Amino acid sequence: MQDRDILLRLLYRAFLDIRLAARAGNVQVGEALSNLLHTLPLAMLKCGDDRACDSVVLEDLKKRAEMLGLSKWLDTALRDVAVNEE
Image (cartoon, rainbow, N blue to C red; front, side, top):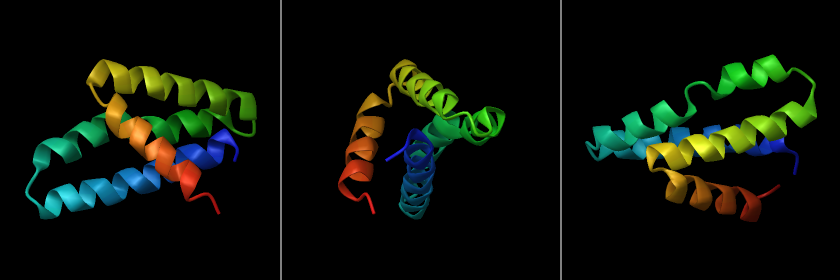
């Protein structure tokens, strides 16, 4: 799977997790995931067709997740994306 596909699937996963958190009244989870991922679409747009750039965006996302204390969420999401690859 290419990094662009992984990034898009991570966004999909995050939207699901944000929706579940909202239903449970857990605003903190939604806010944390939004904080982690809100710049991802713009970063991907800036990459255009440059697939090497997508790899940089993914690595930057991993660093940002670590800074925000969301490495566990990202690691789990990346494993789920790999397992559910279609």
